[in-house]
Image (cartoon, rainbow over all chains, first blue to last red; front, side):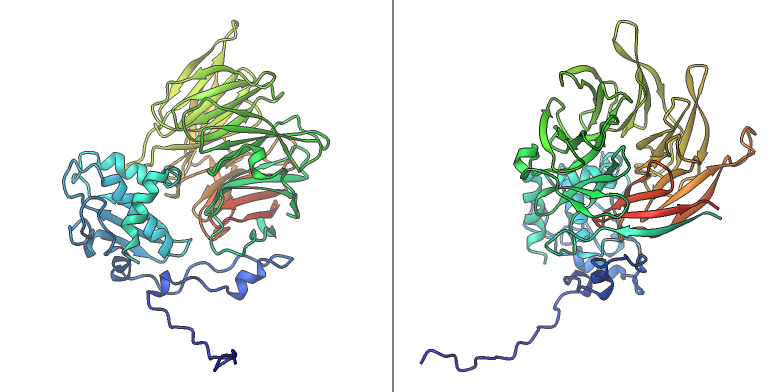
Length: 172
Length: 343
């Protein structure tokens, strides 16, 4: 007999193991109503609870450095005080490159931006920059990272994207 | 008091995805009956959709993707040839790959590829046609502005004195074009009697203090060369006016500390001159104060706004031809149509 012993097993949905912010968003009634006509007024957008700095830090703490087999927090590129601002609509991060000539600084910024963008709701504005004076090009790097068009184009570069994905891979 | 009311909202493309990818730009067909939107997609690289206007029913875009000349890169900008009609539509799309696809249709949709323009080295950021569509301008990350002859699709001129991405370009007359970008400069270029194009003005508006404040993201025009409206990285709209052949700053709409990705004015056929600008997840309409002419004080007042138009930043807003509706696209991947009632 080939029938299974339990043809109708009870399927348990495991509770989310990660932060609520990084679990896949569920489809809310509001969301589904976009598909119907006539359209509803826009939904209220701001979540009731802002993220705490430590929640934000948890998201980025285990990102790997592009060069060293260590995480960004192990290298003190980021720590809790790197989270400059944390409101329901905006998260501001400043990181410290390991050396003032670090050629990976832009890449580190891209990695932080990418991880946070994937982890936070789309309406949260994420700004990543370099702590002033800790890098010879801190201004230029900060301006590039603030330009979402440049960031979008950089992430379409296969080489850059692979490095960023590798840095993020172990941190999920 | 004027008002803006949501009238139509696009459904998400299948498969139902929480992150369809941002929409970057929109263009309204000159007949005011359809519109094109472009952007990025995590699965396909680009997004390109055509809808009816104003009710946003999806229309077929055309052949399969390869035939339209796209590779898997973001489509950043789109523009209709202004001479397009219900029976002959030409559409230009600019890609992050650096190429421009010229599409044609004998209706409003189901396009086929006419030409792929290649030459610029990196991302195409904006496109502008002359009113008669004899020249197409394309601005790029590679710091150049190219002018293409639309009869031969050969470059007429390459304008290169910007020192950063040329974020936006706009023909002011058939013989005059403005460009601006990452270097914080607004440049005016003109064609002389010999048909040569050269820079005739280089304007550097006063900058803000924060990183990126100085980037000039967009140029809005009135359909004449009298005034230019330039949006910067802190949300200011800087207004320039032609004073005896030279542009001079005559005022600013106060910044909101959000990048102004688009500033748009209605065509002369609209019964108003509302200045539309993006700002964060919303957009605003400004009107000129009737007491304009006084040098002191605010020259523009906020007429109305939509604070949360999209679940993410608004990247482009435009008036429809008659100025009675606004179309917006944003990082949430949706297009929305808003009714504007003048108060």
